[in-house]
Image (cartoon, rainbow, N blue to C red):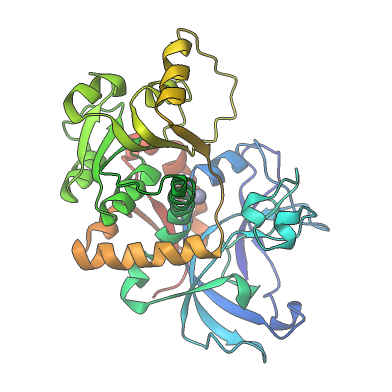
Amino acid sequence: MKAIAVIPKQKNSVHLVEMDKPKLDEIKDGRGVLVEVLRVGACGTDREINNGEYGVAPEGFEFLVLGHENFGRVAEVGANVKELKAGDFVVATVRRPFGHSIYDTIGQQDFTTDAEYWERGISRLHGYMAECYVESADFLIKIPPAIAEIAVLLEPLSIIEKGLKQAEDIQKRLDIWQPKTAAVLGIGSVGILTAMALRMRGYEVHGFGRDARNGYFNAELLEEIGATYDSTAESSVVDSVAKYGQYDLIFECTGFSPIIFDAMQSLNENGILILASVTGGERKTDAVPSDKINQMFVLGNRAMVGTVNANREHFEMGVKDLALCEAMFAGWLGKMMTHKIVGLENFAEAFDVLNNAGKYKAIKAYFEVNKI
Ligand SMILES: [Zn+2]
């Protein structure tokens, strides 16, 4: 079968490989599932791995098959798989509990404290940019056929769901927390999905980005589900408080770390700030009003938390939000899927879109590997 691979840490090494089709008995306990890949999303992580920034090949391989945002159809199941059958749609989770930390042991590998981790398409395990894959049923989420068209968005959404679940868990410190307003900083594909998940929870949502509002499709999408958009090129997030009030919840996904200090100053009393940007650079910032921020956090019982990766329960939460969103705003999620690349062999087209997302006005690029 065909697959898209890179040589980890080697810049622009993306290429097509021919591999043996995986077999059901690679999973020893009869819990194996053979999945025909239908769609695979391509994102900044794939771009960064192809840039040689990170990525680890599986043991015994020189290359790593890319792809973590997946959607497929069950082709065959092992003897001990009762919850899935051939023809079912599924999305696979990404990280596996193969580390040594206590969190891996208890199935919370998204909280691993190990330096090494096992993630399909990213680190030590081949990904889903292939014609098919085999996985244990334990790591597969069943997808209702009604959301098949947009289910490739579930993996990126799962990261957001984990962030929101953490906020909810942390806010249990308050016997009553009735959040009403939220700010979403950064409205790329992650920010748009965050705004959606917050709208599904009934929040008044305010999105922020650097682009001017005029002609900005991402902002139009926000407005279609009842959120607002403001450009930080015109006024800062801190200034927006005069217009919208302080935010009960802020979700940061810009990739521009200095903005977190603006976010900290825009949070309501008892509010929570969720940080989800992976900022691998060396950017520094000064002019941080540290007395003010510290005092706000102390006197206002504010909280801030970082979040990464996701677990099965977060994927399951995401399925519900996707289904609810389709029910409330039919066809809206599909508008996010701006760039379809037909066939794995056209990988160069996908990486051109990823490398020039601004030029193409891309929100989500994805491969159609097989027809739904
Ligand atoms: Zn991704």
